[in-house]
Length: 311
Image (cartoon, rainbow, N blue to C red; front, side, top):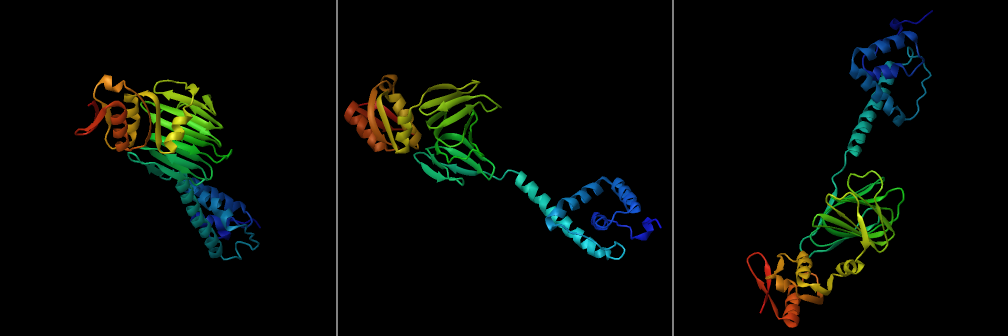
């Protein structure tokens, strides 16, 4: 005798259909099931959710005939599957949505050392803002302003990427410095290799090896390579500034990164004075003493700045 749809209670929901179809397939049941799927687009989504989560409750072998087994038992199992599906889908949406980054920011004269979740270490220089997103698959950071030195733990499966508005630095395991300043970004490599690319590049780029610096400027498609000033980087990591016959205007510009108020030369002639000195970052008293004793210059406070003048 051929079974008909009247041989079983007609399911009404996705859970009931899922439970009914766990047993031996019947042609009448499958015909009715196809009609139910076609009746409303949401039926397919609801049923797919039950199938998606079935694996989460383990394998279930149903040996009884659907007519002998109470339908409620099957519905309970399917309802559990659907609930798990909702959790699984919700979790998928949650993890696919990028979590807010960890944000590290330093003020004038402040420097900060941070150990990241992957074991890498970052030293953040003055007036900097760094965003960090690290998970099991990715290591992505964004340096919005300022400077940071990265001591990266090697992980070939998760490249270490530092993005800026002007370009991207990509490494696996290395030590390098990134400076964002004056419409340019400098990537100086102390150890290993770093690939430097424009922000919209999908391939290519410039490889900055140990001792070299890659510089990207706004509007330039390819980074230029030259010798890195590793001495400058070592100095700021040690909280000092070292100058060897450098125009005072440049000394003041660098020193001002570490002070709440900027410092400038009163005249071009004062700015052209050649300076050789070692100074502690942000130590305005040491700067005053050096300029006074060596050059006869005064550092005079004004409304929103310091001005260096001849005595």
